[in-house]
Length: 179
Image 1 (cartoon, rainbow, N blue to C red):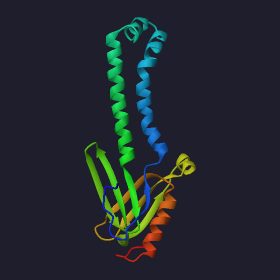
Image 2: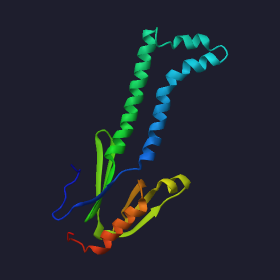
Image 3: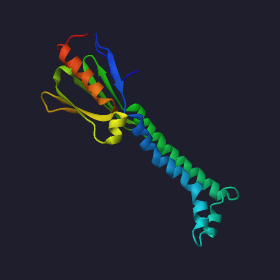
């Protein structure tokens, strides 16, 4: 069920996605936007001279207001679903022979890149801030030999653990052999 074929004697060691907390942070604006039509009539009645406008947003009596609310929520839901799709389909897969980076750029635009572990020169982790330190969220940069290729894994959970696993497979496995 992967976006790439495993070579003979190759197996998946770990699959990782962006940390769930970052995903919730991406969904928060959509939740706020979805709540605006429900809070707006109450806010307008509090504002001086806003009561007549609040009556226009009476979703119980006006067909036009209900239709506008439906379109608003549909667009908000579609944008939130797009964010979920990117979260779910973007992944970093570590096998015993390579690192595969799967990036979903849109509904119909996917990029799959791989880097053989035999080409890895350096693996660096970066955890910046109090909240990322407490939640174990960080970035990994994998540098390779040759054409100055770099893989960035941003916002993954437990980056030090992933770095250690990558380095374990880089240091213990000669190129072209399976584990």
